[in-house]
Amino acid sequence: MTSHTLPVPVPLAALHGGLVVSCQAYPGEPMRSPETMAQIAASALAGHAVGIRAQGLGDIALIRDRVDLPLIGLWKDGHDGVFITPTLRHAVAVSAAGADIVALDGTRRPRPDGLDLAETIRRLKDETGTLVMADTGSLADAVAAVEAGADCVGTTLAGYTSERPKLDGPDLDLVAEIAAAVEVPVIAEGRIHTPEQARAAIDAGAYSVVVGTAITHPATITRWFADAVAR
Image (cartoon, rainbow, N blue to C red):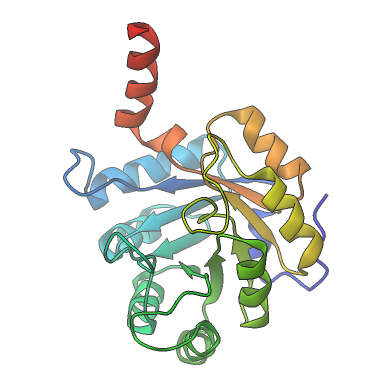
């Protein structure tokens, strides 16, 4: 059961107890285009997703135009360290592209523009009024992100910073720890590969669940099957 006690704003409330589908493709892949991602998002809507998570301004804008679901937007810039919507400039642009919720790196690591997380969130909200999802990698990250003003926290970066091991599946212990410690919605994200794991995340205390690779990344899904057959 979830432990959030603060009032949950719309459209975050629409995600409660449901599946958010992350529609993203990596640079250089055949599916890397806003049109393809918008089609995948529309398919996710047909499959009863309650929200979409999308990367890149073009993808966000087209999905906003095509798909009537709450939209979590982000902008990846770089590959290491803080690269998920790393600066205030990125965050404002994501909001302007049509995101209902801006997802950004919510760890305690230094940010490229020199602003701390609290200043970034405060200025983003002052300029745009957009809700904020903090992508975190640990309990300490999540607690600090809530104190900084995040409207919800995700376990997106669990196993990708030095504070937690990278598991084969989702870090359900972290989901439970954060849900017990904060008063805002906790969104489980990261290496959720099966419906059973998604359900387990809800049971651990997640407000909602984000699934990407296992639904929207054919190259990885194909590799799972190909490797199993080859064995």
